[in-house]
Image 1 (tube, helix red, strand yellow):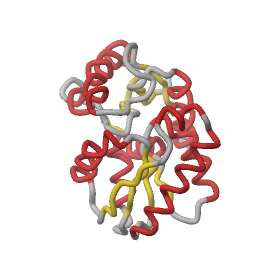
Image 2 (cartoon, rainbow, N blue to C red; image 1 turned 180 degrees about the vertical axis):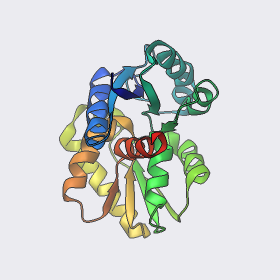
Image 3 (tube, rainbow, N blue to C red; image 1 turned 60 degrees about the horizontal axis):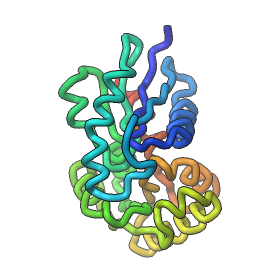
Length: 216
């Protein structure tokens, strides 16, 4: 049987899980791996604050315990705050990465300054800590959308418009590339990347690429 990467969505939105799993599988084309999705059993459909982020940790661990099998070669935790990554690494020997950490590593690979846009202002300090723990290049800072996470999740056109405006602010800050931070933003990030004149770092493909290399 084909070995797989388990894509764990700490949000409870199964549609988001499907989108992220599909993006991961696109990145895995040509490898010997496939992506399989798993969704948190309880919690919010979008993680918007530190309380929800912390509460999602046991849900991520539980989802892994239910879904990991002999064909699992690695795990991707598909929320930008990387909840549960440290806990999972204490349980499993195979490679594990969060999409936040993977995106920061990918953005820093060129050595050029990078920024991050997202919809969740309350997660700002958590995301800054995540960047600090993984960065290998200058970070120009976070920029937030004018629309809320809930508004963006409900309106794909608004997502592209408001994220694009925030990306422009990152460019003004001096960013050579920009991370679009958030699992639920994956579809919008994929669309923006097709036409953007600045480098767009997509967390899910970044994590998939990291795991392919780590698994070998």
